[in-house]
Length: 322
Image (cartoon, rainbow, N blue to C red):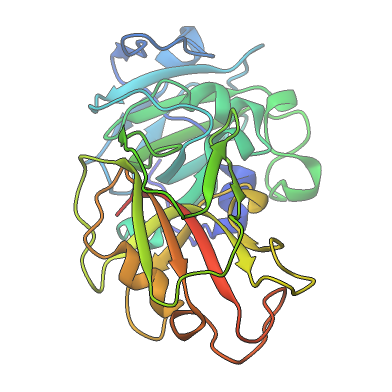
């Protein structure tokens, strides 16, 4: 059956996404990775044709049911195995395993139209199980039982509570879970940073007044692609207020870590805080950057959210992708 593309938005992706189908080759663990699902008779019975990144043609004997998620690899990709904490970009087609009908599908129009989600945050256990240890460039075929499938509040009307799901997933991109560059020694006088087990930074402000000019220091130096003006950067960051004597001094100004997913920043004037853009241009993927923004590089004399007028901002940014 030819998948009929329909828009699978970010919210739908976070609810519906799952793993991919096979045509002749079993899913294998990348070196050093322990997969959470394996291939079986169910996933091996799914036949998928079509080029990676295009709407697949899917066929299987109906009805198809499994007791646990099974996943097989149709097209083999490359790169490091995917971890639950990573954000991926993927095209997905879901089919009702009882009727064979397409329930929902991506548009298959490139990265911008694909679903973007953190593997471990998706509320389909079968999706996580199928994607852990997959690689960028994989086309996967997964068969997911009802109890590991789409939650009732998000389930398409065409899929009943007792139906298994067949999912075909093209893994287009996978971003770092945290900065993995080489640690650097920082000069004194700047805020200190301590990382939690998951990479979340804690920022301690020094005594005294913040610097009057933009300060940028590398906490880790990555080896990936260089960020250029106009690029789109995928980042995790935390920002705190630095304004001695103010009640908000040290307060959290913003953080992607509290969202449960990285953010996408456009490195273009007017799109984000001026000093943050300046600090990130020229950085490499895998780097972790400390940036101290004086008011002139932040919000100036305008207050916004938790940031009082005339405040400096301290950012710690993990550059996860471009």
